[in-house]
Amino acid sequence: MTVNLKPSTAKGQALYRRAKTLIPGGTQLLSKRPEMFLPEQWPSYYSKARGVEVTDVDGNTYVDMSMMAIGACVLGYADPDVDAAVKAAIDAGSATTLNAPEEVELAELLCELHPWAQMVRYARSGGEAMMLAVRVARAHTRRDKIAFSGYHGWGDWYLAANLADERALDGQLMPGLDPAGVPRGLKGTALPFHYNRLDQLKAIVDANRGEIGLVVMEPRRGDAPEPGFLEAVRDLATEIGAVLIFDEVTTGFRMTDGGIHKLLGVNPDIAVFAKAMANGYPMAAVIGTSTVMEAAQSTFISSTNWTERVGTVAALATIRKCRRACVADHLIRIGELTFAGWKKAAAKTGIALHTEGLPSLTHFVFEHSDEPTLTTLFTQDMLERGYLAYSQFKPSFAHQPSHVEAYMKAVESSFAAIADAIRAGDYASRLKGPSARRGFYRLTS
Image (cartoon, rainbow, N blue to C red; front, side):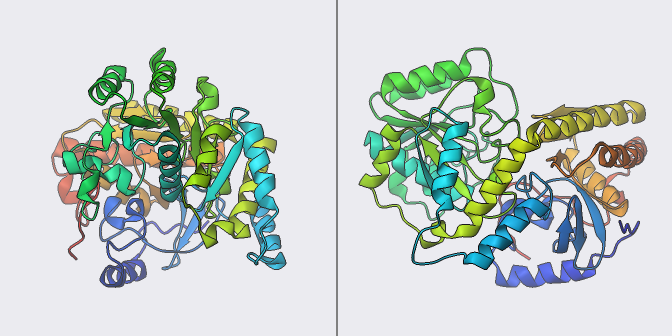
């Protein structure tokens, strides 16, 4: 591994400045904006990646102890088994006039993993898969209104919540989402409730009796469900004739072979997967009961690129390896080591720190009034130590305990420096650029 203690990211920064003049918003994914990590210093672009290492366009190689492609590369970068399957598919022809037989094979595997489901449709990204799922569910119930909890992408149906109240989505993981361009006619069709607040969901149902056709939520992301919460949601959806959709775009294949709802003991009518199911290759799946999924034939849903072979083959190779190698168990182990390491480093250095999340979706928060600045300082310091690091860590199968051990030595040194900066009161002046900005906002430069 090549680690530059004071890496130059000049090429990456110059390329990003060009990108902002050519690509509205600078990147295709909000969660990859350099401004969210380390403005004016983040490497921004990579030239190659393998395992847990990423080499940027300036030639610096880092250990990724942050997002691992926003959770998509569950096996690690350039996994040899998945890549071999993909290369074979490319050599055999990635798209033709005929359909890829692997579509049937993958559908059978997904239904085997989730015996409550009988049918599957595919997409190539989580956001469009959620739009597909909502369309199918609305076609089945013939009702427009949706009760939802959590973050579910960029679709009109979701952003419509902010037509009625511009802050309606602020408590749903990602604040500041502007519904510009969403038809005003969708106002009042997406109604938010908070996780573990059954009373809020019941109030929505009571106020819209006979109109709620869908209940959409993540079965879990951060807090565990309170006893009986998910069961009550399931019962209520059944009672009112609504389709229950579990968004497993983030949680799928990270805690078990398939959806986390398998561990929670509650089955939806539809579940949606993307991200980890194909180890970074574009792939998404909507699975559901035949009763609900057959409604896809009553509404037009079709896309040429949903029939290409690479995503399907990558998903098959990824899921099979996840099962064969007990990948979820490994992610949990690495995540638990990370949680313990953060807590130990915080206690040793006197940093006030809060940790949260699933072991395979770990997260910490500096308990300080200027938390964003401290997190930016942490990212800056860790970059200079050879790590892509942030307040979130999404472990992969390629991460080993030795990676966590080395990372924690760097974390402890970084926390010590941050504690010193807090005591001196000069933490903001130690930043070499602006503090990170989160959420959705318009880039002006």
